Amino acid sequence: MPDEQTQDMRRRAKEVERIAVEARAEAVSEDGSVRVVVGAGGNIGEIDLQFSAFQMSGVELGEAIVETIRAAESRVQTELAAEIGRIMGTDVPADAFGGRPGGDEQSGEQRR
Image (tube, rainbow, N blue to C red):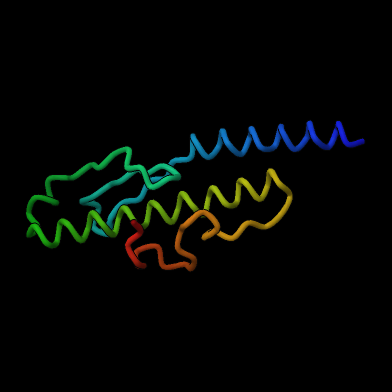
């Protein structure tokens, strides 16, 4: 029945909207000096720097922060795609929401 299908689609859309708003992922730099938490839209929720981060040069610290943010962004996009695919009953590519495809979470072009 069309009404049941419409209701089911609305329920799924609300669930997708909820998880997109709530989606978060964490990444830690290779040496453990930087920890970042980001949301689905690339919103940075937290940046934690260990004491060892302050032993780096400014350039090294900047690179570590950017790489860790990229890793967290990749992770949140992958997890969000999987969850939306589960809800919708179909495969959703990890880069469907502007993320970078591939397994190397530490590399890629900077998004703007």
